Image (cartoon, rainbow, N blue to C red; front, side, top):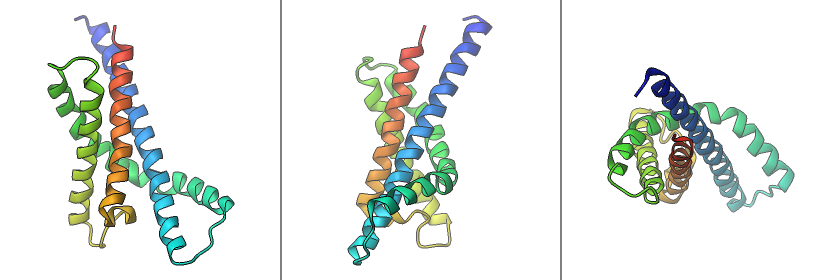
Amino acid sequence: MSTVNSKATALRRAGAFFVAVVVAVALGAMIQTQYNLAALAALGVDIPLAIRLRTTGQDLLGFSPVYAVLVVWALLCSLPVAALCARRLSQRAQPLVYGLAALVGLVVAVLVVNQLVPMPTLIAATRAWHGLLLLALAAGVGGVVFARLVRASAP
């Protein structure tokens, strides 16, 4: 493969990775926000739609950068493993492998961070298994997006 082709491939992969991170982080931030608002609502707090939307926007700006570090770490570790596993699979199965790898990668990243951070948990939604699952599913969507973008941009 020529140097030009390998550089173009690396750029396509980097672009696909960036889009996958943005998708996973945006979905995860929105899930985290709604999860927290649901906990407040369960306590009897009335949360109108306008406040839900404003809070979601604020968390997209405020929580996303911190969460992005975790997602980048999770995807940097999990997507190369997915690439190794997906080599022998059909192109139809590959996005599923990438999605599952990203899902598992995020779960592992959250569990590691929760062990290292002195707080009870860094991300409130991950205190319960269903919150962690929702955030992991968001990362899984990012993994699927990555696989589809890489495949779509392949020469």
